Length: 239
Image (cartoon, rainbow, N blue to C red; front, side, top):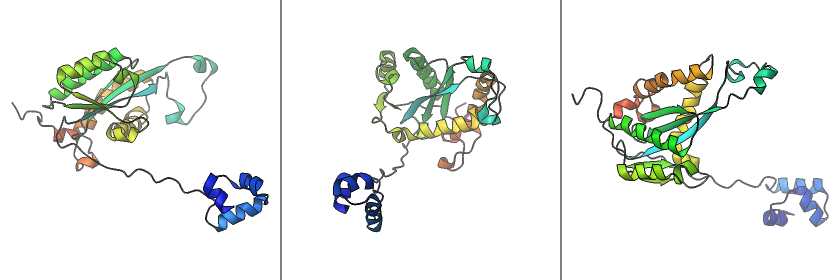
């Protein structure tokens, strides 16, 4: 019974059918020998890293949020939408995000889609944002979404700016860990941390929250200082 368990990974019922022993007996034997649960494969060790200078690596991703016309159950706990509201197709809006690996300075925009042209225009404005802080990016890291990997306009922009495009291995979002963690913070503190009258009001609050994140909110991974403290061109220092 133990040999069958190790060889096949089968549960007690299948092993009972193969060996002719009662299911309850197989279960008791496997438990007695510590084989009632197959040990999980060890997880890949977490490797924390940080590129040494601002601009060495930007991480980019997109997160979608549902539009709404009144506060939803996630913040109110009330599920009393009328039939008319349920039939109303309010759709989605896409929050495009970039974060600098070293400084954690972030840039966001809300758009109606995540098409190639939208992504390219967003990145161009984001590069202008970082340039205003004295940051010249040299690498951009994304997942393998089609809009990133098959986007000719994006590739041309990166080539013109001298930025190398890196992609993470498939199904390994933790390789893009900083932008993934940032999007969790974005959702918790901006999208769902306040009670908005509508998604339009929520969208209007995004620039204010982003300014707070970059310039006022302490970040635990950089010594409880705001990300702007790691910018090479702090406001006024080059004037």
